[in-house]
Amino acid sequence: MAEEQLESTNEEVPDEYVAKLRYLLDIYRKPDGQKFSYQEIERGTEEKFGSERKIRYMWLWKLEKRQLKNPGQKNLALLTEFLGVKPGFWDMSLEEWRKSEKVSKVSANKGFENMQLIAARALELTPEAQEIVLDVIESLKKRGMSR
Image (cartoon, rainbow, N blue to C red; front, side, top):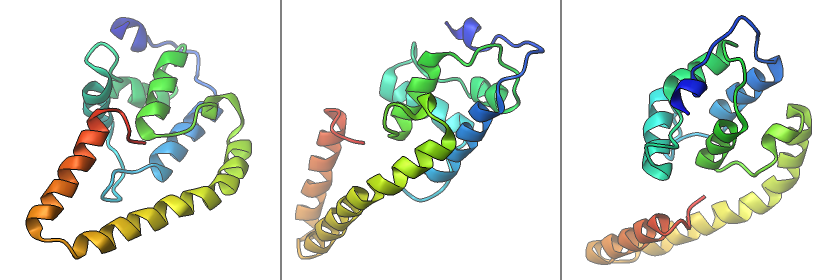
């Protein structure tokens, strides 16, 4: 699979894939607000999906540079899953996706409000209790309950 991932050709990847990749990396960021590097996506997908299913940073680079014969639906799906993007991203135009995202931002605001509430309540706890809350969050993430 890895060799298939990196196969290049003179045929260009459609502009829509490149635009969508750039959109994903501009909008979906690390928890600290910074953009993901290709190497960070490779490490992150390896951690989340295992070494057999990780996305190689060269695949991302070649996708952006339009040097892949076929981006591969599996890798596209892994990328969106890793970034927490809803399924269907690659199946519609970027314009359609942006419109659908505007609609879903209303429900995303509720998630942000919950985060603020959790943070405010955690400030009232002792440092030991705050560590327990962090441990619970990590445990939930390990059980696949993260975005």
